[in-house]
Length: 158
Image (cartoon, rainbow, N blue to C red; front, side):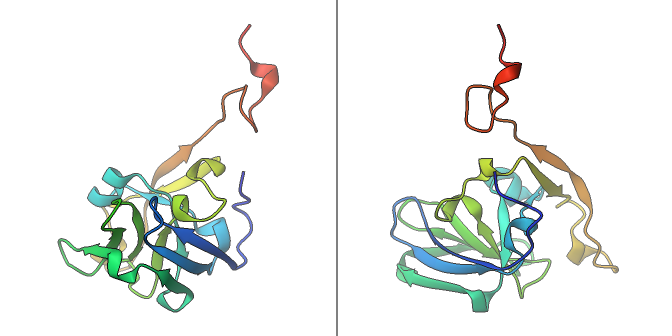
């Protein structure tokens, strides 16, 4: 399991599923920024995202394979591989100076590495209120099965 309490920057390589798009990224807040969201697109794609910036995100292969989807205010830019369809990253509507990066695309990282992930309320978006306040909708939890690494074998059913 990843240490969500570690807010220090970390640099990792990443790629889409087919490898056509590859990148290097520095997560400015480490894994402490891991989150999900209930807005329409985040709810449908189901990814855990971590924070970076455009200056700390570098496509190393396949920039011409990236496609971009925009909707509603057209501020956010959702990028995905045009070959395999995997969402790699997006420019945030809540803060266009930040990127959200799909943890499942990061080398050696899985969304199942996080026991708890805060879920932000995308229906009450920070860009839509004068205080620019972020509301939390809940927490998504993952508990490994008893026979899986990190699972509690002592709680195995008999």
